[in-house]
Amino acid sequence: MDSVLNPQLVVITGCMFSGKTEELIRQLKRSRIAGLGVVTFKPARDTRTGAEVKSRSGGTLDAHEVKDSAEILTIVKDVDHVVGIDEAQFFDPGLVDVVLQLIRKKKRVIVSGLDTDSFEKPFEVMAQLIALAHPVVKLTAVCMKCRVREATRSQRLNESFDRIQVGDGEYEPRCLGCYEPVIR
Ligand SMILES: [Zn+2]
Image 1 (spheres, helix red, strand yellow):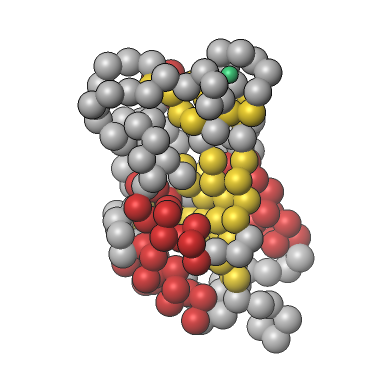
Image 2 (image 1 turned 60 degrees about the horizontal axis):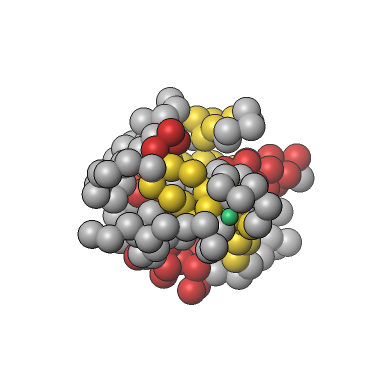
């Protein structure tokens, strides 16, 4: 099995509600069907679901909740060919080195996460992973204001300046024409 698996870093990114987790689950399940060992991680701070990765359309996959990126290396085993990481924007900066170490161990790493926050500022860990990845899968949602154009921004709907607020009701996807910059 190892002889045919190319080490690879895939990043699935985009705004909120663009189907990133759904695509991550699809790719990981496809790997599992092919007989590859798959292990999946999510940061413990994401309180939306339990010890599984869950898409808004209902797909689920068992996942390890880890307190930091270093814990990932203690859990991944030789039999794991493919490593999935969801909500990567919430991980510490050490995630980049952890991913590179996994690649050197001939793993295929598939990362999903937001590219920017609602202030249009890149999440640093995602910006670095996007720079190192091939392919980068950039997904869009439908703009919730004009309901026509491709949404690439996560519009915050309340006054909070907390960057990592978790909660779907606080955001909606917007296209560049409808996005209203939040002035801090
Ligand atoms: Zn729009």
